[in-house]
Length: 164
Image 1 (cartoon, rainbow, N blue to C red):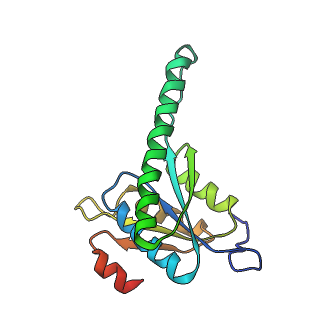
Image 2: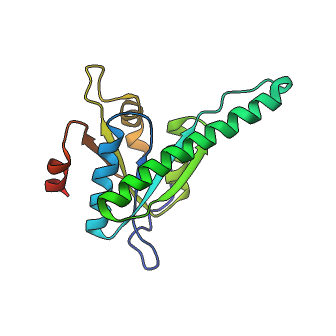
């Protein structure tokens, strides 16, 4: 993670990275980031990671079908999230689908895209803690070249409007 950020240089525009997962609090990150990028004139990039397991070669045909279905589900989730962002703030986010492990793919995308200026995550509201993604990112924040915004998962639309 040594790539310099260029978000505010001439010819560049800052991007807020939002992770699209299946958690209930994920909508809070989408809502917050949508309002924020609209307010500050930034753009949004949404990432969905497809966790593809190692496959046995003899089952390659089945593996290809499973991969296609996983990508179809990922694109459907991004359609919903993009629609939400557009409805909240009239923005059209960039969409990225990656294969692999969540943390690895988040770190790789941040490293590859020098315009990503902020990672927006939402904290879970359950008793099991803030969520696996925030816990994992928390262990790697010293290596990140960008700030991480953690949106409390219990905040309402009105409360988020007041903050953005």
